[in-house]
Length: 114
Length: 111
Image (cartoon, rainbow over all chains, first blue to last red):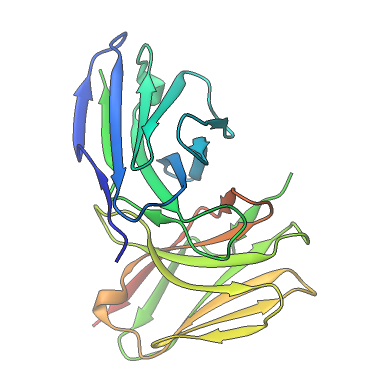
């Protein structure tokens, strides 16, 4: 089975801090994704990456950046955290572009910005 | 832009009955659809998928139906169990990478 691991289940940070959320997958997947999940809004795509050192903006990239230095690891960075970034963050991966395979998700990081 | 929506935000089902969860999508170019289940405190878990060249696919106790004419997707759960209580999402893929998700239907199973 695919294993997507997010480093923290719960995280509390302060406004203005730089925050790192880490995600690791163990199935040599090429594509990795970061979403945020908010009540009534579903999952919204922040950034995705289809290869090492490659990144693409999703639907709501403002206030975020990402890093993919190794194939198995995809990091989400909040450059200067704000209270409207309090949310559940979900990482996902899938094998390669265009295939008919589902994205596999981690269990999420619930981030609170005070 | 495209949107994926579920018809009802909540569904209450008697244990042992069949459940039907509905989803409408708007992008006729979408070629791949997925149903996910999300339990409290966990990430979405893949249940079943279907390609646009099919209209029905069955798994263990679950069936997905796709009606491209009216852009409608449904998930049927047979003999619903307490462990089926969760939020269910449909997702559509309209390009190589990105999925669009509905807001979810919360299914509650009554004993």
